[in-house]
Length: 169
View: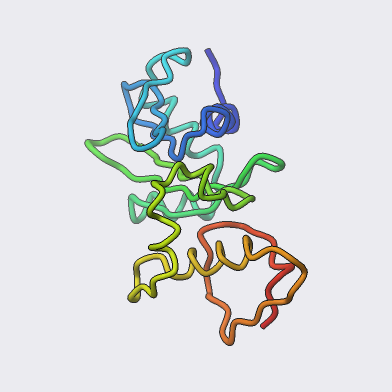
């Protein structure tokens, strides 16, 4: 059975998964709410299949860098579905990969299935490195209304690809 990375990533998003793991001699694995599940309908992937799948989503320049460093971080997009953060690496002599879903739309607290105490905690100021940029963008996105919000310095990177229509630098 021939499968594409786009097909696998589409299934991950449809199943509400957060990650796709591709390993030699294993089923493709999807992470759903922290637990890994095999995608048995695709069968176990040979080392050659995993390598071909990985190389199908990167450029020749990226492939050269991977072959030199044996690891590569990159961005990938399935138009109309989602963006993904990818990592291709070599482990135990085989090419392997992990893809993380970066949704276009920021999920609400209910969609994230967070406990009821979370709305109180999200207002707390966090220290550096604990997701304050993503939290800030989430708050801007869910502030509601047409009021323009001001952030003196826009964060350099977001975990989500959200609409900046309510943000003004």
